[in-house]
Length: 49
Image (cartoon, rainbow, N blue to C red; front, side, top):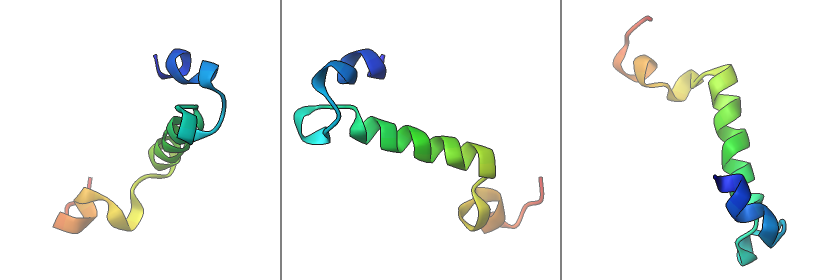
């Protein structure tokens, strides 16, 4: 859905392009692969999963 909406508008996020959604999707993909690390919720509350 995001791809169809933003790709036609180019790259720059100022004109509604796909740069901003691409940045967030890459960030979320990196967190999913690597884990939350020191910012993870289970580390904050002291649980071991």
